[in-house]
Image 1 (cartoon, helix red, strand yellow):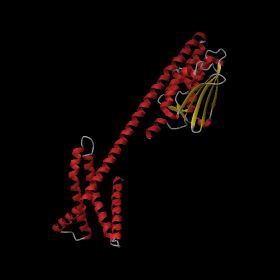
Image 2 (cartoon, one colour):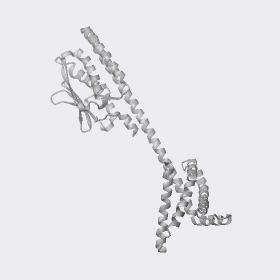
Image 3 (cartoon, rainbow, N blue to C red):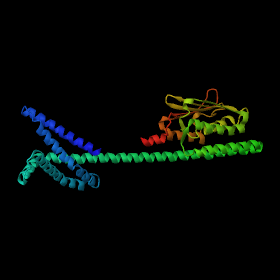
Image 4 (cartoon, one colour):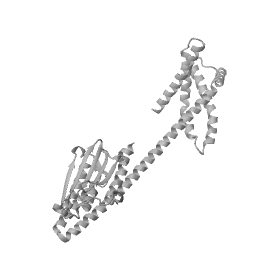
Length: 362
């Protein structure tokens, strides 16, 4: 494919200068001799095509780059007239073989010398154009290689950062869950035992999917349901959870363990200290190419100005993961509801392919 393109380039080169020859004839003589100029330019171009592999090899062996520039220029300055004369010799011999008769040694020398005088400077220019184009393409290839390497490095860095954030959630969640079991052990041993069984099942599910940064929304809701079963044992009728999910969004990919820290935060700060308990509303919907996820409670709210809000592990971890996965395309907001309580809203592009894999392909 590469050499087919190079062959077409040389053909285009010949046709371009053939058209110039036709225009000159029409201007000066009023008539056009069609075959001669076309034949000569094609034959001369294909002579250069035959030597192009050697020119490219020499160009790659002696590149015009820092540290080698002077020596490379010197070598190419010597090579240019050599290749120029070589193409002329090929042209003269090939024309003699095709058109006939093949000239003897004396006529061959005279013909070569004639074309050297007539075409030498043009041939030198052609040689340096080949070198220049090849060097430019080599610079571009190296630039693309560096760009790809930097992209791969950035992807691996993001994956490592996401791994760290994800692993931060596991001990945080496990500590809080075991703390709840410890509290229940003093009040209701049977309930504590049931909570441990539910916790075991939840950990089994999350660890089985721990390699993935994103999972389907329906899988994330299954994990959330198992977590809520644990909290339901602890709070019983004091905890009411209402879920509203757009069925068209169930196959969307979301950060793994997205809902759990937000719901845990809502329970801990919005419901746990209230004797009457509270309500948590969880929603997921698809809007204009975005996936909007929300966790809302009817607790006391922030009780501080927004500017003084200190985010704990759950909120800060979730915000960071969204930034790493979706960048400026994501949105994460924490605000008080007018009727009381806290609203946590996240939005990011609706997608069904892993974001990191997509970026790597680009």
